[in-house]
Amino acid sequence: MSYTGGYLGKLLRVDLTTRSVRTEAIDPRLVSLLLGGRGLAAKYYYDEIPASVGALEEANKLFFFTGPLTGLPLPSTTKFQLATRSPETRRYLCSNCGGDFGPRLKMAGFDALIVEGQAADWTYLTITDGKVAFGDAGPWRGYSSTRTLEELKAAMGGGKIGALSIGPAGERLVRLSYINVDSRAFGRGGPGAVMGSKKLKGIAVRGTGKIPLADPVRAAEIQKAAVADLKVSRANHTKFGTPQYLEVINELGCMPTRNFQTAYFEGMSKIDAHAMYEHYLEKNYACYHCSVACGKTCVVREGPYAGARARTEFETIGLLGPNCGIDDFGAIIKANQLCDELGLDTISAGCAVGLAMELFERGLITTADTAGIEARFGRPEALHGLIELIAARQGIGDLLAEGMSGVREAHPEWSPYILDVKGMPPAAYDPRGFHGNGLTYGTSTRGACHNVGGWTIRAELQSGKYDRFALQGKGPLVKGLQDNRAYVDSLGMCTVVRGAVGFSDDPKGDIMKAATGYDFMPELMGIGERIYSLERVILNREGVRRKDDLLPERFTKEKLPDGPTKGRILTPQMYDVMLDEYYQVRGWDDQGVPTGETLRRLRVQELIA
Ligand code: SF4
Image 1 (cartoon, rainbow, N blue to C red):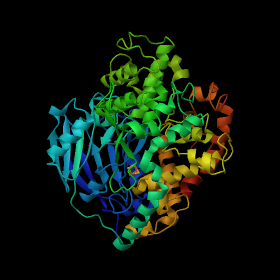
Image 2: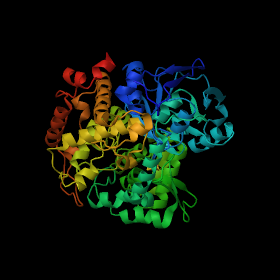
Image 3: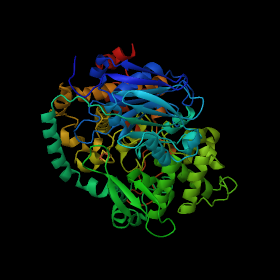
Image 4: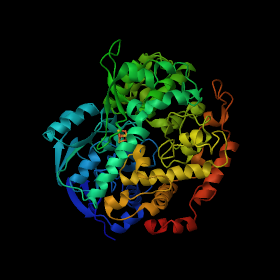
């Protein structure tokens, strides 16, 4: 097999302990089975991270993998992938991110970067066209993730670079820490703490090489047609970004409110996309080679948070807003900015703060735990103060910094108020209002995630094929979405634009041929299924079984008390109907372990032999 475009065929491996660097060839057979990005990252993780390795131990590694489309002159080819052992879930983590870093890494000559070992002192890395240097990040300790990006750029002498960094939370091994990538994020699962454990404050890369492209003429035609399509099909993304979904999700009775105690937020009109657009939007932001520009930089122009600035999006607003009872958009922007600077994932932070507020209102924690903060729902001071406590590991913040698994381990009696699957708290959708979304949370290969697990919302609302409260049929729906996402994440293209170039669950078109010289299209869904099953094998090796695919108590034991979904619940019996169907269509046994026949059919057996 030989490709004429998309791949460089080699990876860069950096050992922080020995300060050594080497390049390695990537086996083309692996590329043909797993594409790149998420698929290859999972394979390297499988080979190199045994189940016994702790997330914060020296033996854990960071596997950054681009895809064949990353960096090419095609739509939104910004994405690259991270695999590592998650500090938050204590299991395999895959994460997808935009920004410039992935494209620049390829221009520097590498499909992938693996960082291993542990530096003796705080370090940053620079990669310039294949030349790696180790810098002293000691003076940057305590710097925000955003300031660290600026320092990295300055250290590289400016110009076109990609950079990633952590903030103080990552330095303190807070398990909700993110990695800031050119102001996009490897958000969920706490990968910032893995960098913190390695004393790695940031990495910058500059590449001046050309990424091979099989058919530049055809690629230019595809790009032009896609841009025209996206101008119409993604017009709402360009105007409102992902906040466009806030109002509709609330009206459907699915918006997490006050730690998921209800799913309808009475203050939504103050914080929805229209409020953002009219009062707070400063400018749009686009990742590398993206015409959609769904990023929304928002600024507070007056009032107590004047000057606060952040790139807000749906999940962030939902979980720092309604989930904490906050209806002040300025306060949400301020909280978003705090998370960015301190280096916290906004979804996990919003869930942690929501939990703390409920515990406070129930009298289970007091001002003695919160450094004097009246940690009630709806108080911006409490939202901001609790975020700072988590990042500083002070008071209740030290416990929340251990993630939902850590909180439950310390206080099993708080389980009715703790929301997570496999240690990862949910995104901003209440599955009592979209039952397929419950299966998404349960079977995602990284915890309660709507991306990796399959975003069922559009299908459950718009296709006319699925009733959102039905149980039958959700297994195949979720499997299809997961397999689709697994191959798209492995390509290096943003999921928002995939429809414009034929990356559906019935892939069509010639974009892969134009990019790589090889027509992957007929194989893509099968590759996605292979990747998802390989990830499941990894999770099985780390102890995951059916019991770990279940939903938290609140979703299964408490009926929604009010709003459009009043009385809705997803009982264990209801959930089992969906889970059984899902395991069956996946070819997994009743404990969620792929059968030998499934592994052979998908050729996963060859990857794990
Ligand atoms: S659509 Fe949004 S997330 Fe996707 S590449 Fe463009 S700006 Fe980035």
